[in-house]
Image (cartoon, rainbow, N blue to C red; front, side):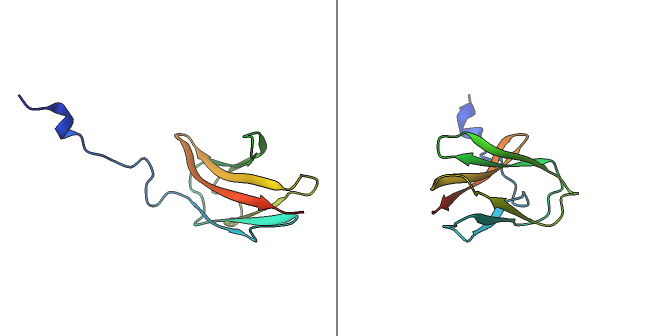
Length: 103
């Protein structure tokens, strides 16, 4: 018989046309940071901002009606440190970037 494991074809869960975080600027930042996506969203996604410890600080539902491909996050009142921006889809994390807040 044939070994079933040699018949496995690897596929990526991330499609090339899926939405990504194209840029985060300025980074490091002091106060506000712009998170730019590579394209408009055509399916429901959540843009989340997390602390270094993994606590969700912002959970914004984004869809095709969300205006533009950019989001401005105001981190006033938060301590300096490393934060994360991630896009969550139905299957999990689609993309994730580090943000460095300086004071």
